[in-house]
Length: 154
View (tube, helix red, strand yellow):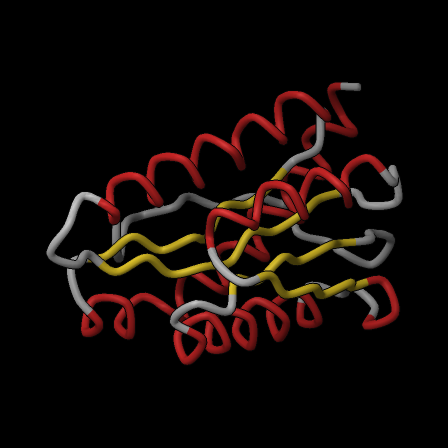
């Protein structure tokens, strides 16, 4: 939920982590802002620039396959999905939102790789703009935290 109490954790040290980011270009103004906020937060958490890999794909439906290719390289402690799907007048919104979300989750579960999903699904451009910075930062924090959680479990 936007503005929700997200709790606190001590697992936000990114100094030794390698993070991959897949950014959809569709609605590029929003996804660029998501990336900028995410990238800045990763750096603030101590992830070294040389350990951040950023790739772009055409749209949200292409994000999962790129994530899967990165996860299979076994070089990343966590991955981040960035995209923006804005409701239109047809069923296409539901299709893209549901399938991209399911694809990201499946890649994470199948490869045992934590993936922070920051593919926004909004009713309109104004909602997307209102969420782009916070969700970009959140994605960075989730990726770093979950890399440490899985390390502790494993």
